[in-house]
Length: 601
Image 1 (cartoon, rainbow, N blue to C red):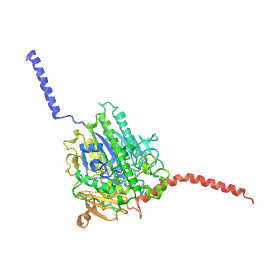
Image 2 (image 1 turned 90 degrees about the vertical axis):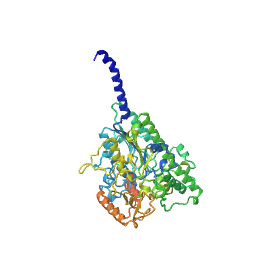
Image 3 (image 1 turned 45 degrees about the vertical axis):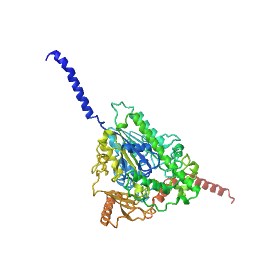
Image 4 (image 1 turned 135 degrees about the horizontal axis):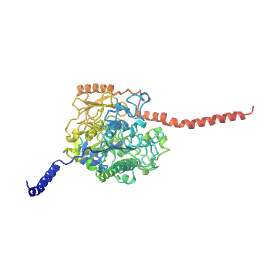
């Protein structure tokens, strides 16, 4: 080949080579090696409290995630917050993590038993630890509630940076204000050490600010060529009591609730069916004792309307902060590579501490419940059991109990296009899923394995949801596989479409019942007589679950509500009275001695 031929041929070779490379790149777009992950947890939101799950509450940012991802319409958690968080972080059933009950409600006879440590045991590994070890940069912000010991705070559980509130909740406007006398103070930790907190804040805004700060000033500060993917665990206090929200969010809810809880309950019932979340023939779950709205005095109706407006405003404010977080992630050019997971930790909260003498006495010195001040600093609002019937509509029961209203909550997973594998957007997965499934899902998407094995760390009990993200009709559990649950004596066992359930008084009667929750999510048709073989089979499976997971019998006469009061008295109130009582006793004795000496013989 002559020199002239070489020089005339080279440009053509280069052009063909470049065209071939461009074609290959067009066919095989570069897929990020591993996704960023943002897990967002709401507190005490009911099944239909999000717009894309049937709510009238404006939640445009969560609805956008639902439109881009997958909604899970039969997703189940625990009836209380700390067991759910333990399962979410580990992928393991609650008793096996050590958090089979909440610290605030565990009876003394069970304290210290393996399933009732009320904090994570040393034999479980968190998804944060596994992602951190695989190279992720990890962050935890918000409510923690799985242990305040050094070995259970976020730095020891796989988080590089963290700002957390350690207990079941606190005031949303003042950082040093307890919401009940369940602890001696509010425990705040930053990176595992006592945190220096501002005197005043708004919890949802503060948590979002801290999460954004970590992403901008820690994660994004690393050169892009060296930057690892991030894992963010963001746990809001919304909508835990006390219900509080910025006034502009409350005012936007004016007029929404003037028709009362029954009308709202029926409206949401219809909407969940229209959205395709529940079957067309779904019946509205029973709700004994629901008050008649039009029979209330006008002053009482005004109070009730306002407390629901505050509830809605608090949820809307949280959604706004989720929008701010996502906008920050977009500004960092990370949104296209970020998986978003949103869930509530349990069903809506019915409790009103003002119904109990101990609550009244303590709250009288701390808060007001004047209608005009509800939602503001120094005011205490709840929605009570009437409005909760709408928050969980069309389901029955609520937080603490094993009915669907206590255990079934919204779950949204938005997988970015690079990891979607052609999945359609805005789809609904209607099969039974569980909070223990989240950790294995995230690990699979991140390409990380779990070290659990006999004699080593506790193996995960959940199943990956990745098959459902690709095909909502996929099966992630075998037809004969069951999943047991127990909390404070209220119990359930899930098997396929069937659910065996027992609720204790005052909501239930302590008897086992059988429901087909795929066709009857409101639990209105008891099948134990019609399907006796299934009833016996699931009851035997539940008894086996109790043995395997170390579920213990409760003491005679136990109720969670009374135990919370007794534990607060024993752990907090009486110890705080010891020193004042001792000082008073000493001065009384000295005064009596001096008086006796001065008395004439």
